[in-house]
Length: 115
Image (cartoon, rainbow, N blue to C red; front, side, top):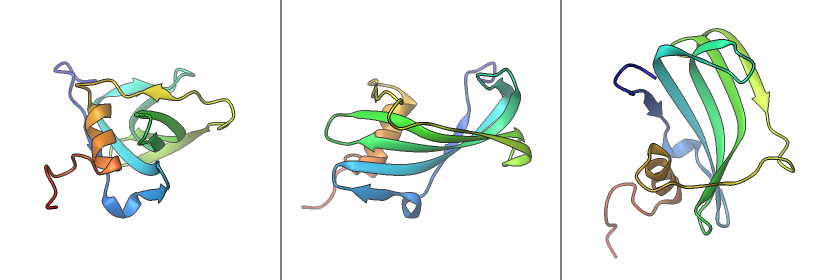
């Protein structure tokens, strides 16, 4: 993260796939300062395939593709998760994850929806 703790995340609704109470989304993230993978390799942007359980308010990362440069440029490295092994993480209130969860599950993406 940058000195001010900022980074940018991007996604669009056409990248969402719904199956019952599960929603899968592709999230792109850009960092002002290089980050490190679990293996210690530097990266400046990434794309994550995240699955959200809208009924249980939890999420898990299914796939991450790391890029050495911003704007998904440079060399890339991917980490595919074994879904039998990946634990679900609770959505923590007040975090960026909570904002994205509500957007993905459609419970607060653009404020109240007309009834």
